Length: 138
Image 1 (cartoon, rainbow, N blue to C red):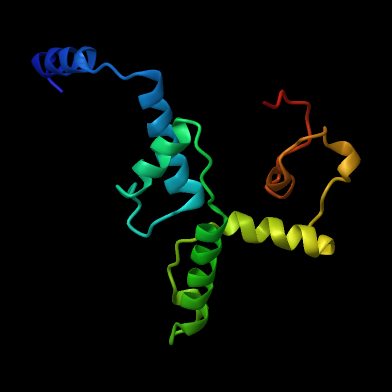
Image 2 (image 1 turned 90 degrees about the horizontal axis):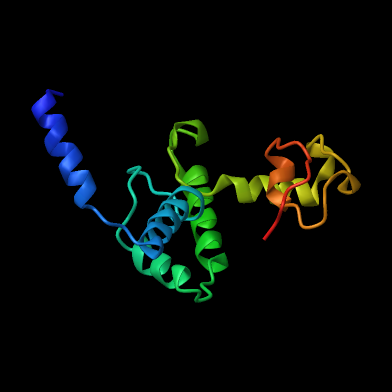
């Protein structure tokens, strides 16, 4: 990037004023895309922004049915692929399946006992390989 282009870019960056709520909406939209409603294209879908706006305003948004639908759809794609499951590219929140397996089939995972985790520690973090530690939870 030439020095002239850098000046133009810096000037445009300074003109962009993002409110705290706008930054929260952007974060929530990315979080929804990455961890709750992943897409094959690797892009944040525009339909996540209204949900992110509602969440940023403090409205309760139920994500359970949507996540479950994504999981069922992804598993259906895996089992119906004519070449076999390893040839299917799916996009679904696999971490929920890992957490469910860990809760219902504890012998599948080497896990620390519940007493090693502070009260309120995220359940999914236990199966993601995150070591138990004291954290300040909101």
